Length: 395
Image (cartoon, rainbow, N blue to C red):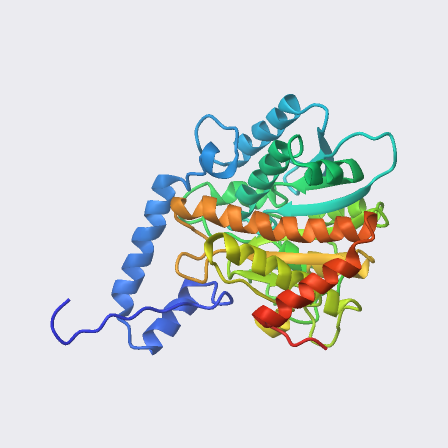
């Protein structure tokens, strides 16, 4: 850098998800567009060359090649059943548009009784590769922990975990084809008859204020919500499976990236969850737990308060079904690498997110089975007073 030059950096907010949008912002800020575009292209190509290595020691995937593509995730799921046949089963609960099985891991100790449940889905947006990596990490951690940790063993006795590592399988596979498809977001169903574009944004397709805000009815848009609520096979699979057991589910978690946020219902600014205060309180406790791992700041609040208004999301739908604690995790980062985290950030991202999820799961469990909610609430209120509420103000 020559004398007189200054070094500057730009952190892009999560809603600037298009390269073009980002470049427009940078150009308006006085940065040279050509160098920015070249840097982005070089980085994208390097990510494809490295194939987003998600090694076994990083994300818990039992794969031989070190890559976390869909075929290897499927093999890993089968291996989990072989390694832990007493607590893990694979459940196929739907088909994608391209006729692939949608499967989850059911994890829990068999007590011979009907049990409560906790839901987690990852990979509803194809390009968010850190999400499936986290699902794998989460499964590995709870399976390694329950035999030596009394609390985890207790939770495994009382609840079953339903974990879908990749929900948008068709889209995820498409992102692995080449560098031009890497940032694909939607599924791969065809658009309306008069549209040559493919794909519906699955996290805008749930029957939760569907199509009212935060969407585009241009079928080529990445925010296209589909022709109607629950038009997509992937969403029908989730709603049929969870909806038929909704009284059993205590918690519904959907894992995304990026932005370092913990989002609570509702995405529409005109609606407030009946347990808003509790959702904020528990969410703040979770973000505090995540910060303690690697001092990474996460913001908690509703999408309109901390991100942008949305409709038709999974967690809004789940809350409307009566599932009390529903959260969307937006994992690292804040915009530098966006959907393509470097390999050295995979493990720390999973480590901190695990602590946040564990906090919510433990609260949910203890509230239901131990009658400990009063004491837990006092502790969480202390955290809120000490740390300050990030995001929306309690109402």
